[in-house]
Amino acid sequence: METIHISATVRDVFGKKLTELRKNGQLPAVVYGNKKDNIAISVDTKEFKKAFTAAGYSTIVELKLDGQTSENVLIHDIATDPLTSEVSHVDLYRINMNKIIRTEVPLHFTGESAAVFQQEGTLFKNIEEIEVETLPATLPSHIEVDIAILDDFTKSIHVSDLKVEDGVTILTDLDQLICKVEPPRSEEEIAALDEEIGDAIPEGAEEDATEATEAGEAGETEGESKEGEAAKPATEPKAKE
Image 1 (spheres, rainbow, N blue to C red):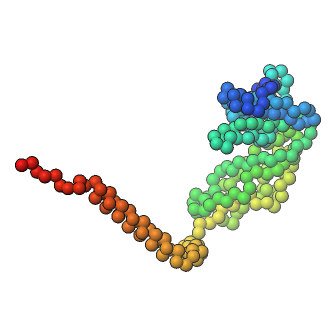
Image 2: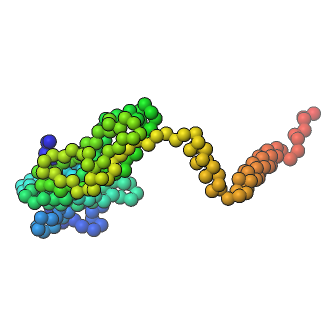
Image 3: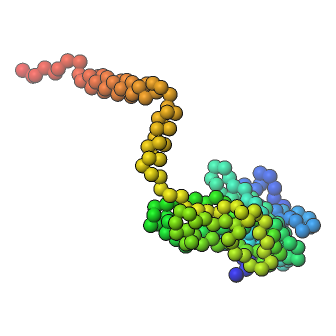
């Protein structure tokens, strides 16, 4: 896999001044961990977004600081603006390449399930990531789950079915269900569900709703009538003699 890079510079801008930093296409960030001091840095916004798309939270990134020292890091956390959903701050965690780490790795679902596209079932995903333990050099960016084996509604895939490289230990319960295909609802099940929904509606609610709708329509009709009358002149113009 090609190495993912992020360039950064040490920053001395904090607080309200960060707004100007972001306007200039830079993201405030902090790098920490591995028994070293925390360092406040800034990274190019576009470069970070590209790196995050490729790396996510489970791929090692090479951080180059001020064009000199390089460190291996994981994107540990990102903060987003609640109004724009744009990334506003980044946490980068230093990695000791000789020390085993524990982290979550996403599952990538591949293939096609005959139970879905032929038998109209629905793919149910119980989990979409698992916890692993490994040295950073063997940390997978993702683990593939081939759903092609789900060719009927009796099949399922569990954590124990996953294949990982040597040196990677899965910590998630091996009996944990990952996914299965649920059959389409029968007419009887749909009817029973409709009945349950009907029973949940308070008695008289439908009548109240109908009356409210009729009253609203009557009010609209009356309003339209009054508007029509108001648009007419008070008296008909007399014909010129």
